[in-house]
Amino acid sequence: MTSSYFAISPTSPDERTWLQETYSRVDILVNNAGVNPTMQPQEASLLTVDMDTMLTTFNTNVLAVARITQAVIPLMQVNNYGRIVNVSTEMASLSSMSSDYYPLAPSYRLSKVGLNGLTAIFAKELQGSNILINAYSPGWMKTDMGGSDAPFTADEGAETAVYLATLPDSGSQGGFFAEMRKFGGAIALPW
Image (cartoon, rainbow, N blue to C red):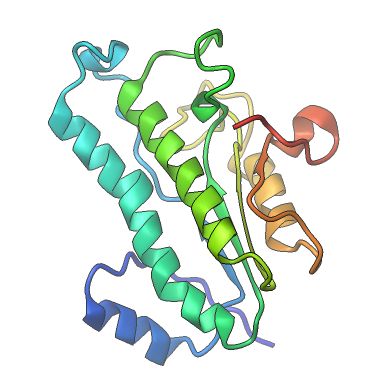
């Protein structure tokens, strides 16, 4: 069995057709691309956030994920098998948003709330199939987005993604998980 890794965000029918013709089978999709404009001063408040910044953030963090997922699901349905992992953040947990210690970051947070909603709705639509979709928070990592002060490497952040991408057939559908290193195993987060 061979595996391929690709980065694409199909936005047109031609790109979706190319994906289907080039890859006759897709088993795993990890939606990891994202932007976080938190360091911009206006991102400190929902009262001052720039709507163009918010739109750009939503386009990348929510709509691009919707497009690639729509393009890949038909390839998973052919074999009734697939694992979709959406990289989210604990900052998008509605139940703790009013009391957590994270920065306000309205564009980033609201886009990830949208991603979590996308995960839940896709999970509902895929119920009864062997295509499982879940979201998780990798934590603060040493990446271009996280910066060099972050305490964890990208490899450490990927542990939960690998776990979710290799779930057994009876695995979680529509869950939201914390990074496994925090608890020694997969722990569901509140939406």
